[in-house]
Image (cartoon, rainbow, N blue to C red; front, top):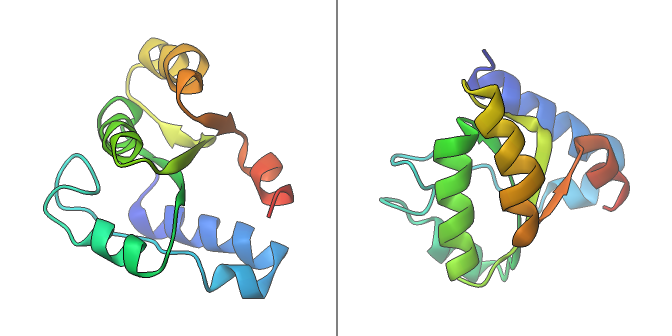
Length: 118
């Protein structure tokens, strides 16, 4: 299982290897509910910084990532999901979400491919 600290350092490592200026625009948020938007000031922080494109990853693809993706899409954010930075306890659900459900609304990429787009 990947803990929050490991995930955070992995993501920041990906960004830092690309461009230190871009890493200052990265916002990592600790969430309180299933969706990262519920019960937090995340939307206010994003709008205040003019952030319109979110990159999602996390533990429980069928819960956290799915809920945040749906709410962010309803709020008109552009979205990318890092497939290899998501995990779910049900491998079949993970496969279906990443290969069939998510691509209908968002870009689904591997982390290294996403890094090259920065």
